Image (cartoon, rainbow, N blue to C red):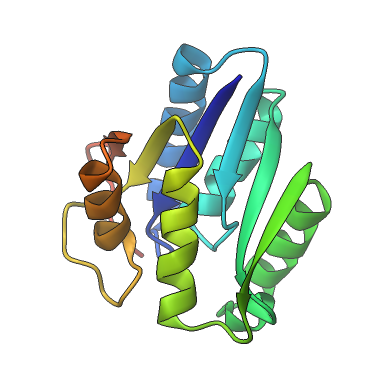
Length: 160
């Protein structure tokens, strides 16, 4: 079994989303096996792209939900609907004990993803985190834990 986690930016340009879908699919094909499990919080952007790629590769999803009411933190109706659809397709779900979505909840969820995977894919432009629990924080934590962390930021990629 390969446990592959994902952390990454939420706001991505449409062209970057397409680049990432192809890059993540290639990475899963190269590193995954017949027992692929994707560990993700199903956040907008990188997490949702990763989740679709895992499912397309025949893998299963393990969702790490940061808090009760997590879906209320999504900025768009489309992202919230995508989250709900992906959540319905998960094989396993872990909901953390936070009452509401907060930066502490996001940080803890990111740590949980990193702690529960063999490989962490980080869709990251190398910049500092915009808020506590952002991609840079999770990459730093995963590296400190000795986790196999692979940065994905294809040429031409940009935040949306």
